[in-house]
Image (cartoon, rainbow, N blue to C red; front, side, top):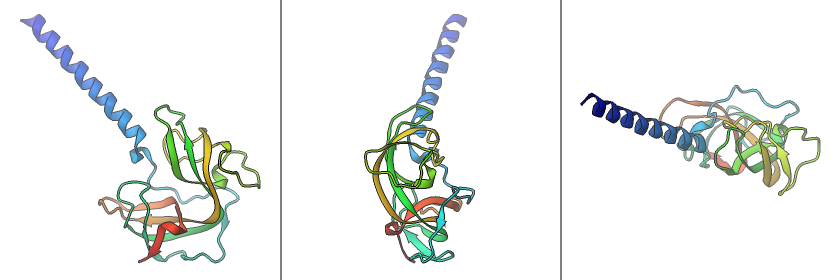
Length: 177
C-alpha cells in the first residue's frame, strides 16, 4: 500500500510540474512578459517633438492592441518625440517562439544605430527592453517610418493599476478624448 501511495504521489508531482512548465512557456510568449510601465527615461539622443499633434499633459484615447486592455483606454501624453519608428520580428534571447511585427521600437533603441534610418528587411540588434528577451536579440525590420512617437500613462480597460510611461504609441494610434 505504501509503495502504491508513493507511486501515485510521484505521478501527481510530475503532472503538476509539467503544468507549471507549460504555464511559464505560455506567459513568456505572450504580452504578459511585456514591461507595461517604464521609468520614463528615454534613450540617449532622442529628440523632443517641437510641435506634436498631442501635447504633453493632453488626454487622449488609445486605438491600439499592443496588449490586452490597451484599445479604448484613456491616456495622458507624457512625452512626444521625433524619430524613426520600426516594427520588428525577432527571436527572444531567452528562447521561445519568434515574435513577429512587434510594435514599436524606435531608432535610438537599436544597437549602433548611427544617424541613417534602417529599411524594411535590414537585420539589427535590439537595445530595447520592452519584453523579456528583447535586449540583445537579432531582429529584422518589418516596417520603418519617420514620425512622432508618444509615451503615455493609461488605465487598462481590463482594470488594474495605471500603466506609467508606456513606450511607444504612434500618432495614428491616438485620438481625442
